[in-house]
Length: 101
Image 1 (tube, helix red, strand yellow):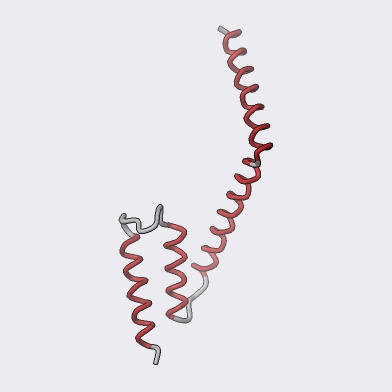
Image 2 (cartoon, rainbow, N blue to C red):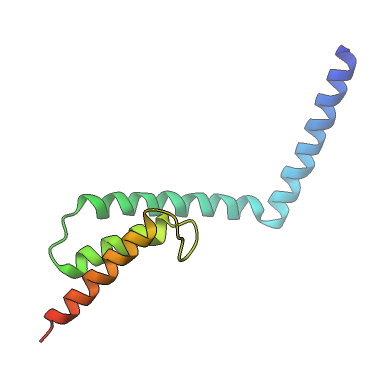
């Protein structure tokens, strides 16, 4: 049984080494790293946006838009709270436009 386990572990290690080499050669590893870094940066920016008080209606709309773009699983997601946030954003934009002389 121990020999079978050792063989399985060796096969897995060889497979992992082939996968790692192919991922590096094709650029997958770099793309994955860049995607992770971009996600981290977007998360940091959302934290800054949420902790910065809006001073205009456009600022509030921008905050809501950022949440929609980052949080929705897909565009026009119909699950709570996305339709409600989109509706509030649309109302806010409409009201702001009515205030422009």
